[in-house]
Length: 126
Image 1 (cartoon, rainbow, N blue to C red):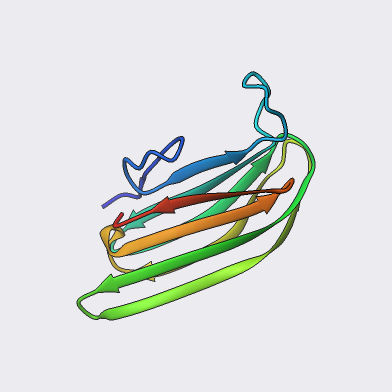
Image 2: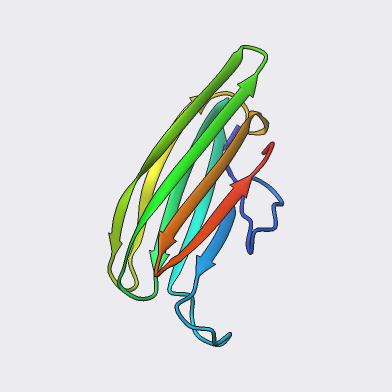
C-alpha cells in the first residue's frame, strides 16, 4: 500500500487533515498572517500526524498538539507543545508523532496562539 495523504481546507473535514489560519488584518483580501495545518499520512498500518505552520509575516506564538488513539488494543495520548518563531514566508513542522494503527483510530487537535488570537484545527475519527 502506498502512502495516502489526506487534505482539508477551511476546517471542513473530508479526510484526515485540517487547515486554519490567523489573520492580523480584518481585510478579506489580505493574505493570512499565519496558517496552521494537521497532516496525516498512513502507509502499511503506520500513521504519522504532523502539525505544521507557515507565516506570511514574521510571527511568534505557541502551539499545543494533542493526539488520541483508540483501538481494540487500548488507548494512547500524545501531548506536544511549545513556542515557535517563523520568518516571513517560512513553513515549519511544530510537532510530529508516528503510531502503529489505522487513520480511523485517531483524533488530533492543533491549537496555535499568535498575534493575540487562538485558532484550533481538529480532526475527529479520521
